[in-house]
Image (cartoon, rainbow, N blue to C red; front, side, top):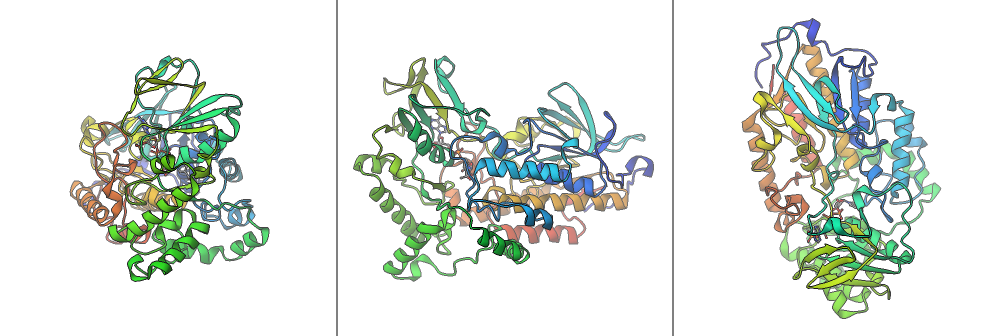
Length: 557
Ligand code: N01
C-alpha cells in the first residue's frame, strides 16, 4: 500500500453521508454503477444504504441483466433457486416464495423486479441507456479524481468511482458466417430473445450451437416446430436437471434454517452448502462408483461433477465420470450414429457442463435432425437457409445459441480510458490483468464485479456478487473515513494474481480444452483461464487478508 499522503481537501473529497440518491443531473456523484442485473441492483442498494450518491445505467428496459435478455424457451437456472437468491436482507429471504427447485427465467426476473421495487431502487436506474465510454480524470486543486461517463444518449455524467456490473455473459457472440444478413427468414440469438412470444408452429427451424442455451431450448422448440435441424460443432455433456415443483413444507424448512444454510454456503468451494465429496473416484470399486454416479445422475444436476473429489482435477478419475455419461447418451439416443455424434471426447466439466430436460431423447423424435459441422463447417447462410458441404438446409428461422464474448466482452465493448489515456483494450492486449478480479492498474477508482480473475461463473454467482459488492462498499467507506482520493491496483500484485490464477487453473482439468472460460470461442481473443479456479473460501480469505493488511496490493492516495 502507498502511504496516504496526498489527502484532498475535505470540501471536494466528501463522499456524502446521507441516504443518497443520484442528486441533480450533471453533479459529481460518488458512484456510477454500470448495469442493473443481480450485481448492479445489489450495488445500488448497498452504496445508497451507506449514504453514497449513486446512479445506475442499464442498457435493458428493466432490471435483471442475463435474466432480462435470455427469454428463450426453456431458459432456467442450473443452481437451485433457494441458493440462487440474495441473502443481504432476511425479510426478503423469508417473504419470497420460490415455486420450483430450479427457477425458470420468468420467475427469476419477477424476483429481481420485486427486489428493485421493495427497496425503491428504480428511481436511481436510467434504463434503456448504454454506457459507451468512461475516462479517468486526474485530481486537480478544485476537483477530486473522477470518471466522466458517456451514455448512448450523448449525455456526460461524472462520478468519483465507477463500478462495472456489466455482466460476464452479456455480450452475445453472433458468428460472422458469410451471407448471414441475406437470410430471408427470421433470426434469433438466445441472449437477445424477443419480449413477445415466438411461435415456431409449422416452421422449419435451425439451431446453431449445443452449449447450455441450445441444450435447454432445443427440446421445447422441437415440441412446437415442424422440423428442427441442430447444427453441432462440438457435443457437450448434459446431465438431467431433475427439476420439480418445490413443496411448500420444504421451502418453509429451508427458510427456518436459512442462516445456517448461508453460513455453510460461504464455506463451500462453489459458494453452495454442499460438503465436498471426500473420496477419489479411483478409491472405490467399479460397482460402488457406478452406484454413486447413478444416484447423482438421478438428482444432483450440475453437482454431478462433484460426485467424487477429484473429478475436476485428475484425468483418470474424470474418465470414469465421462465414460458414465457417454454410456448414458448411448442408452438415451436410439440411432447409434446420432448417439456417437452427441458423445463428447473431452473430459467432463472441462467446458461448462450443461443440465437438461429431455435433451437426448429429443433426438429420437421424427422431426429433429443433427447436422455435424465438426469437420465440414457451415459454408454460408443463403436466403433459403444454411449451407454445409454444398448442401442447403432450407429453414424458416435460425436460432443462434452461439454463446457470448464472456467475462471481458462487456468491459471491452466500452471505450474505457484510464491514466494517461490508456485504453482498457490496449492494457489487455495480451489478456486481462485484474487484481482479485476487482481492479486493474492504470484505472484508479474503477471496480469490476465478477471481473476476470474472480471466481464468478464457477460459483453461485449471487453469493459471489454480494461478496464483491460488500468488499467494494467497505473500501469506499474506508476511503471516505480517511478522506482518500484514489485507489489503484499495483501492477506487480495484479501480475502475481494472474500467475497464481494460471497455476490453480493448471491443477484443474478445466484449462485442458477450448472453451469460453479461456476465450477460445471468440476468434482472436487472447488465451488464459479467465475465472479464478481456487474456490470461493480461498478467494474470500485472500480478499479479507488484503483489507487486514491495509489494502495490500493497492495504492491509496
Ligand atoms: O454458449 P456456449 P451458451 N459455428 O458458448 C457453438 C451460461 N448459461 O449460451 O463448442 C457453429 O456454451 C459452440 O460450439 P463450440 C452457462 O455458464 C447457463 O450455450 O465452440 N457453432 C457451442 O456449441 C453457459 O456455459 C444456463 O465448438 C458455433 C455453442 O455455439 C454459458 O451461459 C443456460 C459457432 C455456444 O455454447 C454459455 O452458454 C444458458 C459457429 N461459428 C447459459 N460459434 C443455465 O443456467 C459458436 N458455436 C442452465
